[in-house]
Amino acid sequence: MAKVNLSGMSVEALMELRRRVDEMLHERRAEIRKQLERMEAIALVGGRRVVRGGGSALKGNESPTEISWPVR
Image (cartoon, rainbow, N blue to C red; front, side):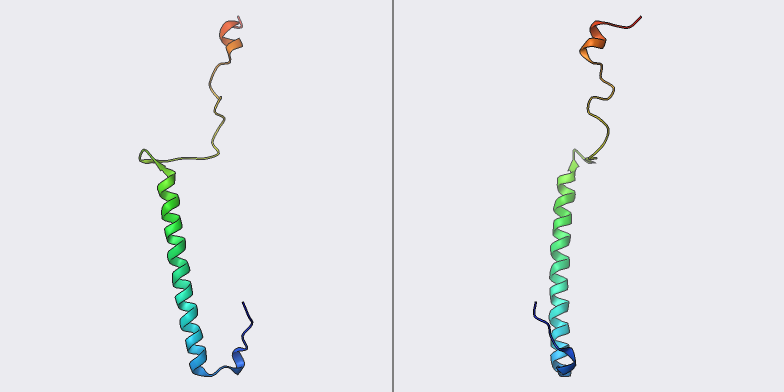
């Protein structure tokens, strides 16, 4: 984006710049909200949230050697 010399701008030009910045911020906010809604919709599975990065998938399962050769 080009640098703008704000001190050389008239009051009307500054107000127009502010209006354009407000519009752009409003559009960006709407885009981010839509992205968040899509992410939440993806994260919801069967009515509950999917938790990522939990424990090991094998935790609590016995390995085949433990099943065949129990320690006594």
